[in-house]
Length: 507
Image (cartoon, rainbow, N blue to C red):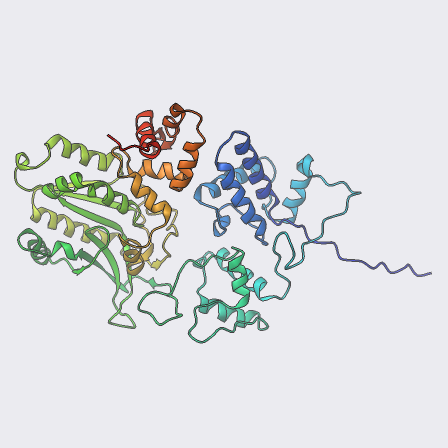
């Protein structure tokens, strides 16, 4: 007698494609909650984002494509993964072997054979989102994931590239959009709504509507190094116009433009562009802020000094140079010499700028010419490519004493647009600028405060939760800030508590 045919569902795939990462994030969240730390909310958001992601991740670095995964959290995952592999678990965190070893190695996660195996959630149902097979959403996710794993790729796709690849590799996927429309098709819209795909670049201004800026690659011999001078350095009479004359005398190839941050930057300009009126340009990883001593005095007095340094740190360029130019006698300045020397020293030691002092405008022009020649030699023979704003450059170059220059660069339009001073700002950015108006609150201290209390409302809620005025005064005193991770201190904490907790006028 023939054996009876057994009918039933296939064995379902595991619900979680990244069980190790989920387990570690859960442990960190519970530990932070037990100690009353606010980082529990950070881990909870990252955990929620990870559970929505339907594909396996091989390292913590790959998790950076997900929402709420920053550099620090990705490093923690990679370090924990390294420890896991060194202890014998040398499998990838998202592989089937890792899932089975994770279940076998953790007693709390071992499933009883008598218990039913949880089935995979249906698409559109409650719980985690799983795109159905042969659906447009699944095809889009796979294409983006393969591009992210491609070592020679850019870790992103433009809308046109995504439509083209979907048409080639998944002919049944609907990619119909209105002509000239920047709206995504339904498959991509559903992924954007669930935070599984991040749209990080909008159509550039001045380009046809619906177009997306293509990546730019400049090979050796296809570009020249060009010094960009801020238009503010050429206005007026006297020393400002003399600077251009000195650069021309030294045969420095330069152009005058409106720079929203800094006074001098260098670009690699395309020498044989398709459109001669709009050549491609990548900003090299160096920026110079020039200050005459009299201008330095006035900027310290009116507060521009700290704000400009803060904006320079956030401009996306790694090598920041502060060019201090002497002008006349030190005795005729509005601030004492000791104050200026202290400000210059803090700029180099605390803020990490390279400070160069020159005797006059001729020496300043000579220094700019020297930098231009040096950058030409530094980038000679290197292939340069564009990157998006906020995406880090080459990890092995650009920082420290490495002889290799940073070759993954911002386009000039992205650099200048990202540095606009009066652009629309988030509540967090406005809160940082508000804190920096308090005497003694630097950019690093303001950023450390905002990392814990991201809005004024959250800070006021924390003050309201304090039982006594003394507790309010000491609320911010233990916040770690700066590279040395020193405490904010009781004096500054008391000043801020008086600012935000006093209903009467401050004296």
